[in-house]
Amino acid sequence: MTSLQLGLIAAGVVLVVGVIIYNWLQERRVRHRIREAFRDTGSANERSTGEPRESLLRGGPRVEPTLARSEHAPAAPENPARDTEAVDEDAPYEPPLEIQARIASDLSVETIGADFAPAPADQAGGAPDSDIECVVTLQPVRPVSAGAIASGMHARIGKPLRWFGRRSAESPWQRLRSDTAGEFAEIVGCLLLADRSGAASVQLIEAFGRLAGNVAASVPAAFVPPDSAREAARAEALDRICADLDVQIGLTILKAGPTMITGTRMRGVAEAAGFRLGDSGRFDWVQDETGTVLYSLANYRSDPFTAETLRHASTPGAVLLLDVPHVTDPVRAFDQMKLVAKRMAQTLDATLVDDNRRPLDDAALAAIREQVQATAAALRNVNIEPGSPRALALFGG
Image 1 (cartoon, helix red, strand yellow):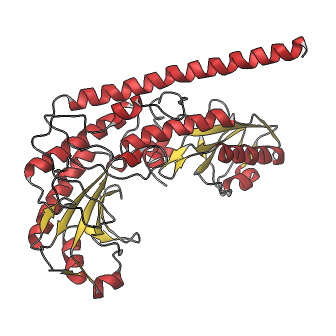
Image 2: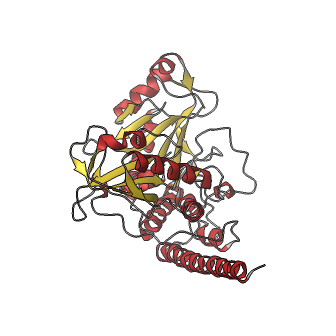
Image 3: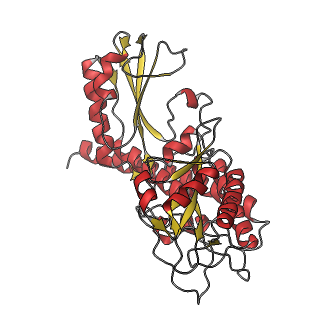
């Protein structure tokens, strides 16, 4: 073995060790921020309001948390939209989410991406977000139109992909579409690193790099391909953080015994409460000012709500669902959803229950509210503002 080969091996070892140490320090920072979020929001509570299930480990399904369960409680009924459970009044307080123990445990990937920075102020209008996206910059030989990168804009590689351009280094970024007018001196492609379908893999990021290379060759433009291994490690770390903060709350309205609610009756009561039947098989409560869905009403059974099924079918109940990261003021949305749930239960002569069919009293609802508040605070603490474009991207898919 020559001295050159030995030198290259030594340099490679030093580089790998340096990357591991850097990523370890970054992971410590993120862990500390999340611990602080729950120390700040949870210290005043007196009991546990819930925690994510074990299945929130990386790669598991995203589900809403549950509250403490009685040891002798009956088994939960089969229900595709699981709701929160009643709180155990005698349980000692624990942080609402299991983040501290979850992050302190050994992780299969010991690298973590850069600490989040606040989302760009103009992100709603469109701007690259390097904290949650793999960003590749193209420097065209001369300014080009959006049509020159049409192959990139129309590509589908498994994760959301965005393209931006700017006319000069001092100009703002502009989201590029097929019909965008003008010419651009700099172009970037942005691949989302994680969403509810999981983290972007090395193979996916390599495919993005090849796509960017093909676009650059056709323009032509200079570009540097992404470091696939580093970006995949960032994606895994980002996915772990989001999995810990991915909270969906459900409140179930259920008829007692064998009684059923006709579909026409359910639709009438839902629409009177302000819901609109959507294409997703649920009723959505939409905020008129913004067009944002605050919460939804799903069938207690697995069958979706459609105009046809509501005319002919019956159901034992329905589940109101709040997707915490998706709304700008989760606590206020929960308060509104709780009132709607109580009124609908009264109108339908039904009961507001947990998934063990035990009635949810005001104490249990207050505990769930605390959980929503703690989750919203933890999201903000890592610079994921609930309801923001960044949150909608990370908790979509």
